[in-house]
Picture: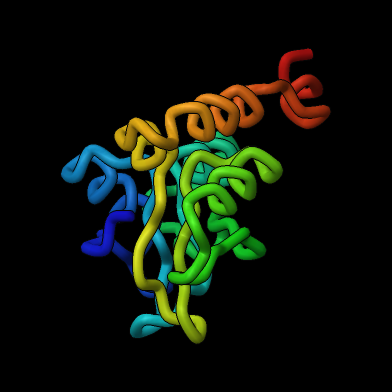
Length: 139
């Protein structure tokens, strides 16, 4: 789990979020109020809900973020985290304690531990399965 997460607040705009993603070479940034997790901004959120909808860079991040996100607690074991990521088809899982962001588990975190290689592989294969939504996008 990464604990030194780059974050933004609701006062940031989508251009500022995009710049942070570029600077830190990341595709997701938690949106927080102090430490409380409000949602996440992904590179996909910026494109689909932002720029593809012709929103300007000065648009508030609140207009494009994902709010109803799946999270885990610090005591979630790695197998449960991998299963949750597979079920929800997500590559990054915010970890919260009492609503406060404490870190993010990424699919790559699962893959670096030999003992969990199968769990990471299974999670990634399920995450990569097309959903009805993604099939609709393709047409």
